[in-house]
Amino acid sequence: FIMLLMGIFICIVLLLASSYNDHDYLKHLDTEPLKDLAWQINALVPFCLALYLSLSLTRWWAIRDQGLGKVFDALTSVSMLVSCELNEEKWHGVRNQIAKFGMASVELIVQAARNRPNLDLLVDMDCLKSEEAVALERLHMPWERPIICWAWILRICMSAMDYAKTPAPRTAMVMRECLVAKEGMTTMNMYLDTQLPFGYVHLMTLLVNLQNMVMTLKAGILFAQAYALGNTNLMIQQCVSCMVIVLLYQGILQISYVIADPFGDDIINFPIRGYMNYIAAVVDATFEAQGECPVVAENGKLHRPY
Image (cartoon, rainbow, N blue to C red):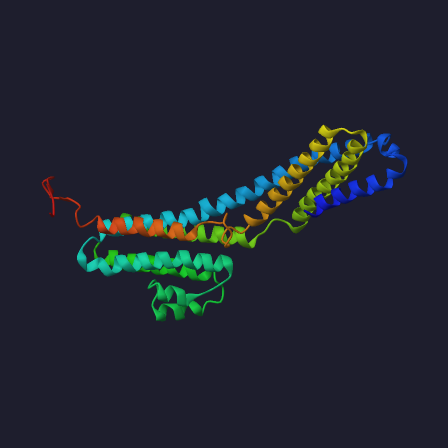
């Protein structure tokens, strides 16, 4: 917006300054050097800005796919493995506790990313008991807390499967999924705590602002010259191109800033509540499906429980 105002100011100043001689100065003004300068800068900025935006989007997608995606996949996989292996009614509390710790870990990831710890919220959501919240509160680093939840999930699963005399390969599958969730959380922590080099970001900002400044300067001078010559088409073209290019570049720069931390409250950030609702529905479906699942007898026949 400031760049556009600068272009308008330059145009008005030139028109007022040349009005004493019927704009003869503007009519004979050589604008080719200014056009060449704008072309040279405009040839460099899109390449650099595209690379910067591509890098920012790659980091954003890695947080979603390799970070949150792994945690979500691990939670649904562990829930399915446990609900199939520990399907009896006596393991109902175990299955529910795994789901609660899993959902608590997702909320704790968001709190750690935003640096807004709120364990009382998890107690109110019935994802944690008061004693568990006190135990997590002793950990000063917020990124430790979701990892602790998955350590609890792993210990509960291993103990329950040992009591149920589950074969070791099945227990190993659950262990592997819990470790995958841990890798996802450490990946998110790595990306969020390791920002792009400060100098690189400042260089991109400088290039964009420099390009926009030259663009508005050229548009203001050419608009004033077109007004003096009575060239309406050139006036319209300069107005449209200046507004579109300046706003587009500034918009791309702003988007790259917002997606650097996709756990905020902006509309283009991750819809965490929607993700949590979907994962809760999937986990609940895997638990509820076991009651009506056909049982395979030793002779290979199916016996339906209903």
